[in-house]
Amino acid sequence: MGEHKPVRLTSPTNAWALGAQAISFLIPLLAVVGVYDPAALGEISPILSDVWQWVLLLFAAIAATATLLLEYTLGDGRRMEYVLSIEMVATGIVALCYLILYGALVDQYGFLANPLTQLIIGGLGLTAAGRVGQIAWDRWKYRRARSARPVHIARVEAIANPKES
Image (cartoon, rainbow, N blue to C red; front, side, top):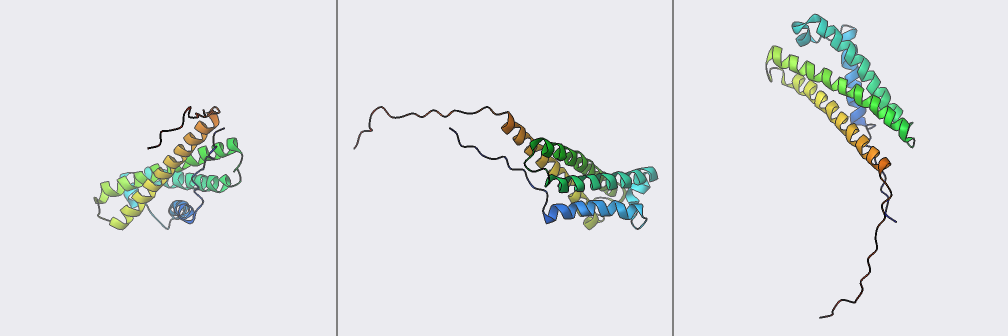
């Protein structure tokens, strides 16, 4: 029969991924306790600034929790898919929050007016969006593998020996 290849999920549980998730949790936490003020969002709308910090705080916590829970679901396909779905949605919202802040920074201060801040915020947004893409790709591979029918490989043998020159 054919050779089976295991489906491998892209693991988010490495120091860089967990560090980005920690930063994604700490930025809004600092905003909620009053240490950090997302001024660019506040200049557009104080309500947007308040909503942004709470939404980012909540969904960064959900994404990080789902990432850590994924390790406990390995081997149980349904539970893995469920936890990955939660992480994908939460990380997508985190990405959106960062991209909204990045847009506000560019809108209020100009492109590259604060290059380090814009690079970090834009980078976190794109990194989170990349993780959403990884999860979507992994889920697609997993579903394709689960729904695949057994493949039978035909063995063809030569009828005659090849000519020797």
